[in-house]
Amino acid sequence: MANSCRMSANRSFDSDDLSTIRRTSATLAIMSAVEIKLQFRRIANALAAAAEVAAGTGHAGTTGRLREMLVQQFLRPHLPRNIEVRSGVIVDSAGAKSKQQDCVLVDTRLPLVDVGSSTDALLLAESVVATIEVKSFLSAQELKTTIESISQTTRLTRNGMQVYRKGPVEMRLPKPNSILTYIFAYDGASFESLSQTIAIASYEKNDGGIAPDAVCLLKKGVLLRSQLMPVVDGSNVHLPSLAETKLTAQPLDKDALLAFYHRLIDDVMPLRMENIDLDGYFSHGDLE
Image (cartoon, rainbow, N blue to C red; front, top):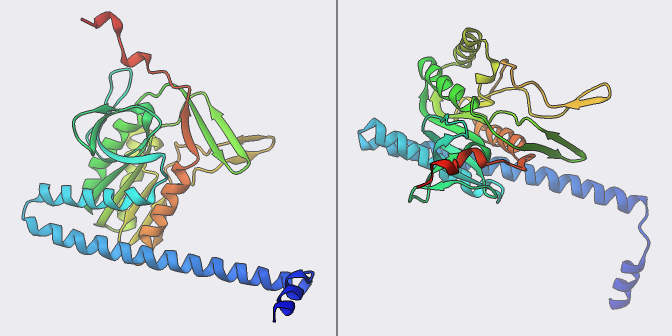
């Protein structure tokens, strides 16, 4: 038996062996994808069930806060180690600030200002990668209010170099793009109503940048803007315009969470800020 094993180990691979390996690898990849999909369905069901339990507080504000915490708890183990989840207000060096943000994805390499909490902080615009607004029910009116908050966030100034790196592509943007913005809702109005609300708000403000990068309705599906992927135009390569307002609806009653997570990770992982300039936050002439 030992000699047989040695002969088998020393035998050269032929084309049949390679075909078998390829088929096995493809099968394992499919199995992995299926397992991930099934696990995200379990997580989505658990989120929905926990959100129902949170409704038992009888107080809309408390229920809303608990549901925000559920999304934060989902995100923490599923984000790259260089990104953490916080909540709070984002400020820029010009003195502008965002509204209170439910979930803020922060680059752990960059600074923030402690406020004595493990979850909340005063957040510097350069350190923020993206924000996620969490809603119990995303009606057209609630979306309109959320777009106002998004508009305030995307107007914040960031000083430094933004780097996009994915595969063989690396792009360095001397003027950083706006902070990415997303909406997660446990339920909501129809995609047609939400898309129309975004289109009208963008038209009224003449600013496509206020459209969220993605919207997730947990048991209905997702609305997705064009993916943040390099566009080849002749000999030039650039990122798609963030002024585009068109969102594509994907009805998904089981896999909305996975689709939303996939888009979020695809967008945020290639981005990082370098050579940031924080001098504007510190006016030494005012020190006492």
